[in-house]
Image 1 (cartoon, one colour):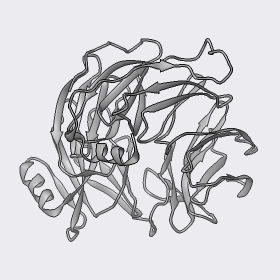
Image 2 (cartoon, helix red, strand yellow):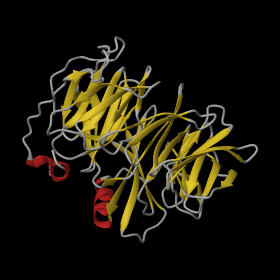
Image 3 (cartoon, rainbow, N blue to C red):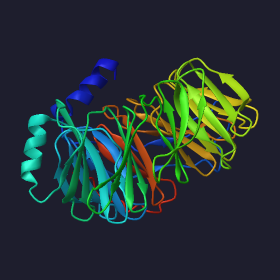
Image 4 (cartoon, rainbow, N blue to C red):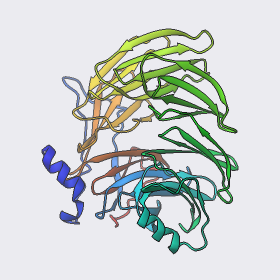
Length: 401
């Protein structure tokens, strides 16, 4: 499938036949070596077809609840045992946040134009709307929904932003906007508890660590805030805008990947760089593993480096743009490229390709993935697909839509 065909598939999914045939052929690919006995073989469990629009986000409550959103503005809940839809709600608008799930509720933010916002408000007479700014052409609304029924409890209306990051802080919900605004809301009724303006846009996705949030800003700072009250705890000046941020397990060292392709580690106490590693493109992901720091960049490379020294252990180039954070299972990495029909199973210690998970040629991965109940779950052009290496959590249900 060429690039033009892929774009057409993305933008006009309903123009293609609804019937989907998912190829679950899994094969071992090693050059001049025998297949490894312990190499995981992932087989398809089930496919939930969504021919209406593209899947944008996946979420779970780490138990049995599974939820996903569509670019059309819909939010759906699935029963993972029967692979049947439990409920569906149409919020209407572009989703600009992840889906956050707690014990009782789901939280999600969408951007609406003014006419759509007024219509949504009028249709939800029992919901509360708290207005922070009323003069925007587009309206950003945070929804609290019951996770059993999908019914809206309250809404929170804020100013426009391209991205919204949501964090569970016990009895409250903390919200960070890409434009540098932050809010804390009571979960029960959406009441505003505090607000903060950082005075600069965010340049990296916030990193939650214990009761703190670590923010990379467009004015070349890394700022630590308290999630409890929004206070600045500490901050560091850096030379380039951060693109992605990580921190070691003990919290002693900060890792920053910047927009010019460098990754460096800072000892926070001494405020001194430990090491610097330069790559060819902007860093897109940083992930700690037992074997070292796993990172990827926009030139399609994935690397493993020693966290203590920054020394390169191995690197491998994939055929396409690496999607969201790779999945780690046992001693293996499962990585998928956006708009490609294969996910790659690499040995974590060496980076060797040992297996592939392949889809039918007219289907491809769209970026979102997660692990739940021993399943690898992926968003694809044609729907939600799950794979299992052990058979656990796999009910072998028929394809549904």
